[in-house]
Image (cartoon, rainbow, N blue to C red):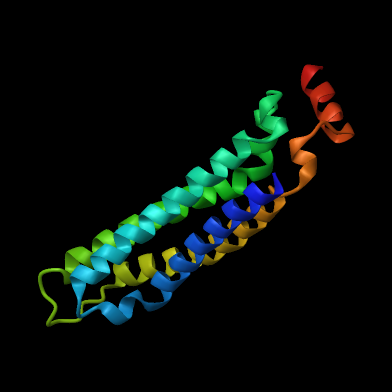
Length: 160
């Protein structure tokens, strides 16, 4: 378990680091819209992969396997909603940027709506990084993978 978790955590953090890199430096590639488009596609795919990895990690917990999915969803609701929101903001921002810049690289276009979307996406990214890292480290807790007193109490509450 520990070895598998270390590999998964390394993959997750690598994807987060790539996402941070693209968010930090993608505007420097404004003159090369094709490269920027490829980076945006890879970034959106990395966000989706991270969401899939978290869902797979949740499904491998003992809590999930005994049928207490509601407890997991309650505990990780913030990350799941934030991941979906961040992915949505990223796709909208990337589509908007590519649409404005792909065919006309000679002009710098920065509308008010684009600026608002840029700020929303970057703000969501900071929250996403924090919650994702926090959740991925929490999922390394061995108590989630074995029977424990708090799980029995939660199960008793659900049955009542």
